Amino acid sequence: MAKMSDDKEKQSTDAHRSHDEGGLMDLPADPDAHLTAAEKAEIDRKLLWRLDWMLIPWLCFLYLLAFLDRTNIGNAKIAGLGQSLGLTTSSYNATLTIFFVSYAVFEPLTNVLLKKMRPSVFIPITMVLWGCSMLGMGFVTNWSGLMCARWFLGLTEAGLFPGVNYYLSCWYRRSEFGLRAAIFFSAAALSGSFGGLLAAAIEMMDGIAGRPGWAWIFILEGLFTVIVGVASFWMVYDFPDEAKFLSEPDRARVLRRLKLDQQSSAEHESFQMKYFWDAVKDWKMWLGMVIYMGCDMPLYAFSLFLPTIIADLGWNTSIVRAQLMSVPPYAAAAILTVVIGFIADRTRQRGLCNIVVSLFGVAGFAMLLGSDQPAVQYAGTFLGALGIYPCISNTISWMANNIEGVYKRGVVLGFVIGWGNLNGVVSSNIYFSQPGFPEGHGTVMGYMAVFLFGGSLLMTVLLRQENAKRRRGERDHWVQGLNEKETEALGDNRPDFFYTV
Image (cartoon, rainbow, N blue to C red; front, side, top):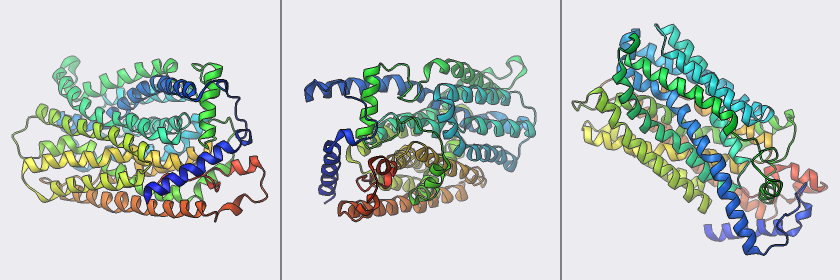
């Protein structure tokens, strides 16, 4: 039945596209109109391949650094940060909390700034600023200094993750975006693996220039981020209508791909408050916020406390070994994240992917909560990682697929991601009862079961119902009396716009 439904949806969409290309507003002339279908497909394949190589690798690298810089405090903790600064459990958790407060408060604003300032300016500036904040953390001498540095780290990092997801959604078709978002987010899992290895190596610098090993983790990683941020002025490109690496024929091809995918994302429009209110009144944004908090809070709880959890397993684990043992769960999560991105793009069943994958996470944290055997608990960290990481990028792709309009999508992604990150405050304050961390594991499991699993199930049901109404023509009255431009301005409220379920 699901396949038949998808086939009908595809036929309806194809019919709309072929009805009258000239009816689409501002559709560029086809530079390949004289070519055969096979020749057009080959040109499109090469164009997509070029976009991937020009955009994805550097953006993945930037997010690897961002996630490394926000979570390396977990590695610094078991390297002696707490003892050096005299941190208690509550004061350490406060340093984690303050990051998420500034991060979440400023996140909804960043996509508007990204659009107005251009990606090639906004993203490098934020990188240089957060690199300086990270560098400063290596020279703090007390808890107050660490709190200040973490506040500014959250403020300056706020623009990257929602900004890049919004940016990529303005380059790719809806059926192509999920895999790219998954590859981009897999950098977060890789940063967990890389962070453990790097921290184990940097700790060997303990005592050099009178600085402890934990300080060198912050100093070297912050300095490297500043250097990469400066290089990003030349490595980050603007939106399709302005990107300098595109020739005019290629620019027309990119814009046509987006237009024929029923997207207005490539249009050069100015911000109006109408787009903000359109986003706020859309029920999908609020349910998306619920779903995203169900995987984002567990993400931060896992990434911030995994080294501590492993050190607490009961094995005779040295600090370096605890750092190294945190690598395999992240590596497994990175692989599954990309696999799920590929599957979700091909099947267009993003909700089902969330539902199934979230059960891995619930099972993993149940193992951590219910067993006192180190081997079982370590296996639980694998399932926990597998259940969290793929759902982050899949949820963002799901929301981006189903919100149409340049600024509306930017506002929705800002709110969804900002609310998820605000729940990082919860993740910072639930791991305190050793041994076993029952409150922490129980809270994470509850978030994944209720918000991620339950929210994804509800979203899937509601979107299927709405698609069915549109196929039956029950929404056609929304466009009565409207001209082509007014109809296109409806975005995802157009009766011929079918949601990705």
